[in-house]
Length: 330
Image (tube, rainbow, N blue to C red; front, side, top):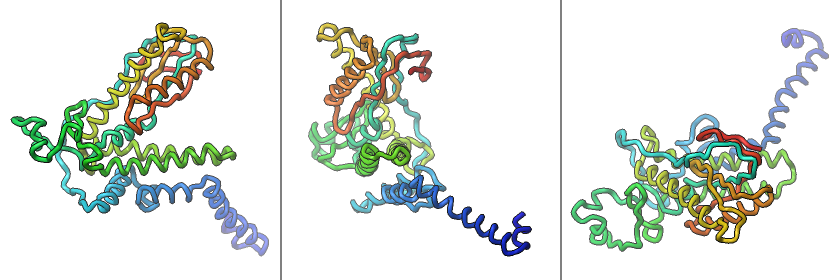
């Protein structure tokens, strides 16, 4: 039909020209409506990669780019030789579900960007890791005092047995990268909170989710055994701290919200998965569950290092818990 229009008269060629104009103009309207250019420019600015990489490549190139940028600022070079295949490590904790149908409010509390926050809070990085040869079998951790002049308050031991120096000794590159990503995400969320146009709110929500994925991918980057720069000590330490967070949150909720402390019922965590816990406070209304959920989130957040934060997410009522990672609610 295009050939017929082209080979016809002035009017048919005019129809073809109008069609071509619309074909070029409508994608521009979509780009503007979806804020695709603005979002990709912002992501390219934060991660330091060309826009084409955002469209054609995965997450690892973003992490490498940000690491290279931070390494240059500190006069460091990234190694190009990849280590061999390492051991596997244990992932996040899944608290054994209390299966059943709950015709009462169930409150969900969620750690905000748990794994990135853990890496920032505990300064987990290639540049802060103390190597096994630095901690001799004969001298143990005490050998650090002689070699690096480090005291007990200058380093941490992770749940998996790795050692990292604290921020006041040396701030890691990965925490710096993550702080930048998390700040960009918070900026998008602040803009979303004040935006009145519902469509633009959805676009901003997409931007903050993309930044969240980029931040979470830093953890995956360190754990990818066939990746650019794997480091089992970092990835296993992060998941180890994550398991501790979930278990601690469960204990704190069940210790604080009890009849003995003046609450209506003893709280019970009925399920927990990686970065969230689901708690039964024993109340009958959604409003009460929301209030207690927010109180619990604030209380528990105060027990952890900054920027680790537990947030109230939602209330299910009713709630059906079938098995691990299999539940439904309204």
